[in-house]
Image (cartoon, rainbow, N blue to C red):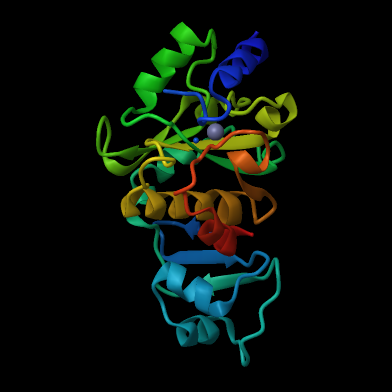
Length: 243
Ligand SMILES: [Zn+2]
């Protein structure tokens, strides 16, 4: 039923967006003293250093590296690295005890195609108007300062429950893809720098940390016919970071 209604939803506005008012490497030991980064494809030491706000020399020193060569899958200790500010607020909520690492193969970014919203508003909308009994179709929402904070990450019940998303048409992709929605319409406007920073922190933590680098980062339009997440969404920049 969820699938049928989602097709209807996408038909209504497949060319405008996501049809919703409706969306590294931080393995922290203990209280965050040690950060491990798992190198993904295309990353360089300088990328990684920039991500964590530390110097290349410090990373090399902490890992006994002589040159600049690193390889995909390599685990690097990040000296003094800590969770980013947006992620830190919800990291405990993300670290669910029922985490199903084998399930998640993709992370898909969306925009809400609305000026405002938050997890609760989209959840209500999906239940009432999209006939989605599991509610909010995304696993995460990143606010734009309207109905939640600018860059605030909200963790949806589908993540807590580790169940399929309702954020794309494809059943297969809903089943194995984490949906992250940034509040806003990025065909007409731009995501805030806080939203993009929060997204980077979240994807880094999920992709490189919890999933050990073994999943793909996509934006919705790379998968299906839609404008989502809008032409002003910095897809290229994010692909440089996440492959
Ligand atoms: Zn979308």
